[in-house]
Length: 169
Image (cartoon, rainbow, N blue to C red):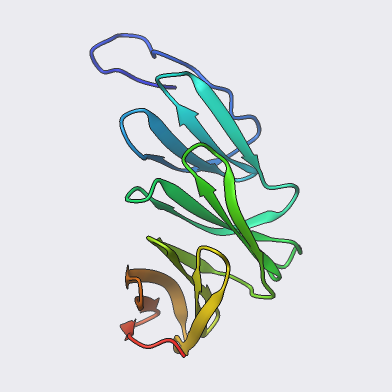
């Protein structure tokens, strides 16, 4: 539903199929990103167009939405165990910008401008949005989540601490 709180009824309704919705975020006042369990969507509220980014029977393992660049990134596993993930960069129109196939089991991903950090167990990898690997770093035992603080610095949320990675090699 698209809601306008000055009206009693929704201004529009969209069918997202058999998706559990994980996140909804506005890129701007007209464009919205929706990440679901089987597909992601971009919605242009002004034009009423809904664009589907189908996961092609792959499993979503992680995602991040960057409202500064109007892009989002999906980690999609080609295997049922969450390994061999593809990193897919998508713009606010729902068009794939780049797809980078990896052998990583990505558990968490973070997008900052033209960089993406991907966490695979106790290792963190840094890529540019063209899919080139810039470097990797030790994330430490018990790593659960990664967030980029800037284009070259990441923070790792562990079981009992937050670690900072300042150099990817």
